[in-house]
Amino acid sequence: MDRGRRQFLRTTAMSGLGSLALTNRAIAAARRLPVPVVPTPLAPSAADPVRIGVIGTGGMGTGHVESLLAIAKDGRANVQVVGLADVCRPRLDAARDKVVAAQGEGTVEVHYPDYGALLARNDVHGVLVASPEHWHARMVEDAVAAGKAVYVEKPMTLRLPEAIRLHELAQANPQALIVVGTQFVVAPGYRKAQELVAAGSIGKPVWSQTSYCRNSKEGEWLYYAVDPAWEPGVNLDWGRWCGPLGAAPWNAEVYARWRRYRKYSTGIIGDLLVHRITPIVMALNLGWPTRVVASGGHYVDTAMENHDQVNINIEFEGNHTLVVAGSTVNEVGLETVIRGHKGNLYLAGRTVTLRPERLFADEVDEVTVTGDDQGDDQDRLRIQWIDAIRSKAPSPSPVELGAKVMVAVDLATRSLWEGSAFGFDPKTMRARKL
Image 1: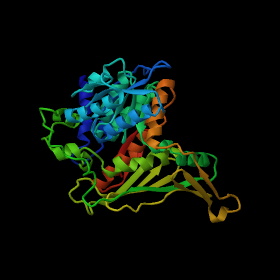
Image 2: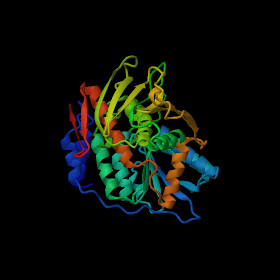
Image 3: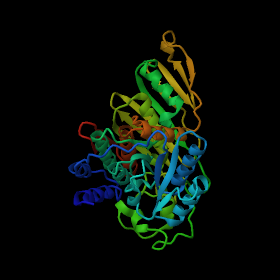
């Protein structure tokens, strides 16, 4: 790794510590690095399977492995899992066993503890990145530099400077295929809403609301179990897991449940609310967020470092406000509604209902539109990624959309911890405390 890249990683890592301050110096440091020109991802011949590697075989990664195997078994896509990489040998071996059971011996190779060996293979068309958030940016850039198509779990990055870096990388390399794993962008309801908004059916969209709320008795993300078989230095490379954020004492709780910790995750905002924010931004064709303010706290799950209740206001270019609620201690959320000057869209599953504002009842007809049942949205996004590898089609969930969402995520996180509103200038791509 060259000196400039090491400095970039150190700088962005520091933005995850202490006050979570997003500094313009961090963004400038990223911009001083040359954006690489990357090769066009390899595509298989018409008769050959799309060959996929998976980086990260924890809960989400193994879930992706199982889904890819099911997609292949059911004939929904000609795909094969050929490589797995992880810093934890027990997790890696467990995922390998699932692949061998489905595809047979000799069909998959494991790479422990370095994912670089997987990227170096010339028989892999695409990689699915399901690592913890603090590794996303580096792994995505390394993968596209190696000529791989990429599917990266949400949130796209941990911090905003990393998202801006990936945005510039994608702009400089339109041939690169990067899909951000926010599956509701392919959900029929949001796609129908997008069509209605584009047609002017609700007039000027003025504000929207959405939420992701759930509850538990013990605490959120504790269902990720701590395995007593984990032995750092024996079958788990803890130093490599810490990676860009620097060395830390071994902590099995952090390793298993990193979403609960401020240094490694934005908690509710990045893990849950991106699912709701992203398709709204897509459906409305919104520009960049320009002002974000958030409030919340530790109301019930006081053992969790990240917040268990958040409420966010996000203002966008073009005059639109999005109100978002998130909770892990109460499951009653907000109805998803897009409000326009002339009418309102109510989204529920595959169905969108357009209801006119009272003053425009003579101009706007009430209508309910139901999209086709396409099955599991996450499977649909995986299949679209696989199809795009073969066809060179554009990303169904592109980096620019992911970067816009990361502005909201990062500034909301800073607002919660620092108690202030934050602004973002799309012209300079810089943030500031207001």
